[in-house]
Amino acid sequence: MKLFVCQACKNILYFENRSCGRCGHQLAFMPERHTLSAIEPADDGFRTLADGRAGRFFCANAEYDACNWLLEIGETAGFCRACHHNGTIPNLSDPAQLAGWRELEVAKHRLFYSLIRWKLPVKTRLEDPEHGLIFNFLADDPAGQQKVLTGHDNGLITIALAEADDFERERRRLQMDEPYRTLLGHFRHEVGHYFWDVLVRDAGKLDQCRAVFGDDSQDYGEALKRHYDQGAPANWQDNYVSAYATTHPWEDFAETWAHYLHIVDTLEMASEFGIEIDPPADQIGGLTARVTFDPYVAEDFDAIVNAWLPFTFAMNSVARAMGARALYPFILTPPVIGKLGFIHQLVRQGGQQKSATLAPEKPQAEPQQEEVGAA
Image 1 (cartoon, rainbow, N blue to C red):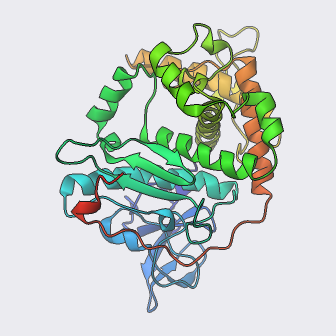
Image 2 (tube, helix red, strand yellow):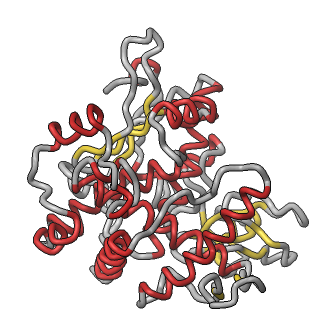
């Protein structure tokens, strides 16, 4: 993720900022330029100070303070590039559900920042009615009869609204003995399943993928049951990035995909801050790194790994000095690094495909109570 600069006063800005804390200018994200822009009212919509263009309009979800992205140039109404993938949203008349949905949108927009940076092919449900990418944000049944499960099914990604509650998410993390559980992690993992469909299955790369992740034709339901009954193998860290990755090759791919996004986006932020790791105690150079490149465009995956490992050692040590858990509590063995390298090449090749033309907007489902919690 980048740091941004207010075009009006040169103040440093962050991705989620809605207004400049120094000069007060309203801010909007311009997806076509990957930048945050100060804006001013114009006779026709808003004028973006980043390029001086007038006639820009906000996504419809700005009305709920759930989005600050601009529509495509020339569009005056509807949803932005990220929000036109929304299906069902929560009941916005409920303050708690509205607040939870806003948290989900923060994570979703960070996901789309990455997908747009790589120019990955993403189709809406209108473009591909069977497999287009769509998000349903669902609350549990108020009567307690049904719990929403986060998951993916042929491009339909369901995110449980309960995950937006920090207490509930931490309870589930402990219950499932996970070292890490975040909203952004959910989005990155689930979209990994979507891109397995798009970049592996539909792109004729099943054999290459199976050579790295294993035979995905094995029964998924049986594999899932075995994982929850028996747990991960004792030596799982030798070959997998997480215990859950051992469940099935599909989950191994999705977990590895999510970690690749974690690594690249975090390194971009480290680069924006000009972070250099050079501990005086390191006499052999194993913990030295200069994060001075853009990992989103890096061709050589070794450069990413060689920066990531020292950086994680440093940030984990800082977290422990604060009495907190390691920020990145994972071990990247050579086999795991090999899997990440496969994802790296897949993303680079996928981004070279012709980007899909934006389709007419698919309206968000009306946030009516009876729809909330539907499976």
